[in-house]
Image: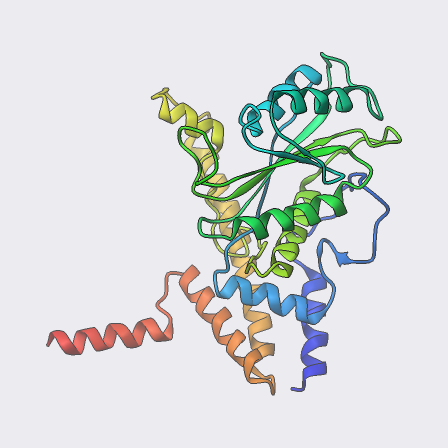
Length: 324
């Protein structure tokens, strides 16, 4: 099957999607014809995403960590991410703020610029976002990618960001993962407010991964289900509770857990079926790289089902021969 035919199948397969239910989009800026459901709308982009899943490319992480209800809490967060003024903050105009005096001026500009923010508020006035990558990622390139991401997604909003690295973070236990704390004022210059939904978070991850790729960092933004990794990591709050030795109780019953397991099993089965369908198409391609991608997808499905892949079978057979 020639390249053009394979491209058509890939685009059709991607358009069908899996669990790509549309949700109400948050307001950031006028929508651009850049991505479909936050994904590259060309066959090359589909190949790139599938190759990233097969090769276990490091995942770009975008996480909402909270948001201040009033200027008092926003100032406290800006103080926290700047490590009390020891690390520089950078705003939407590229201006840098270092030290207590600069932080005080930044807080004044946030409280009185654009849509005013009261000291205490009954609603969230800022959005705290963390952009991160695994240890070993070039921190300066990550910071540039975060800058590009924020400029695109939050045009018209005031925001401030701080880079944290293991070597530069003065915290007692700095994270080995380089990351950027991004604090965004929810109301833009015209008073329109951000309201992120699940689909927006997905788009943010994929756009951030794209900006990382442009900066020379290999990054992907696939879902846990697409990678057959249904278990989530420990949340930051739960991690701190465990560190303090707090007693933790699960509010779910045995029946609840069984229902969740069955729900997850059905979704995994659907994902296996989807991968199998596109692997069959790619296996018939004239292009050797597409056929290699088909093999990778088959191996991914075999691992997900607990079956050894061909190379693993060969290695196991070789070990058995040596042991005889």
